[in-house]
Length: 137
Image 1: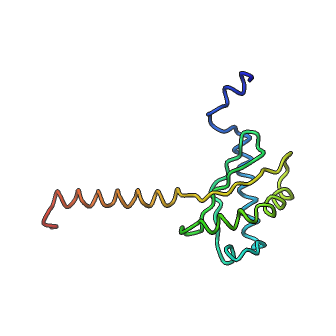
Image 2 (image 1 turned 90 degrees about the vertical axis):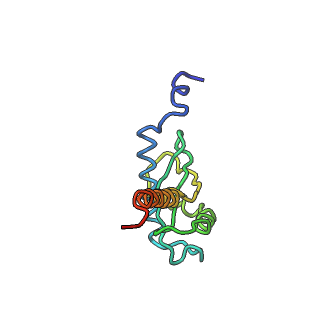
Image 3 (image 1 turned 180 degrees about the vertical axis):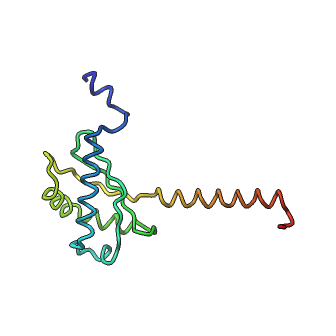
């Protein structure tokens, strides 16, 4: 193992990987927005591609998706996994890269987690106010 590969392990992504992630994210968003996918689980669904994390060698990428406005993303992820071959082929036509990355779709839970945290913080804040002023006046 070279010294260069040892320094990259576990560290932040390179500028090249970040740039490729953004290129892939924009391209996938455009492909999905066109509405060419014929899966019933995707018809009428507005899908947001929130992030794409390419592997260090850029041969694979993890795509984080969520339904626009939040909600249950498991059906959408399953449908996108079924359409992975088509999406990869379209992606290969749209981007200029040595390799078209293999796509792995994952539901993005960040919005749900942030809503839960906000709810807990609001509840704690309301509890603190009621402790200071128990009669509500």
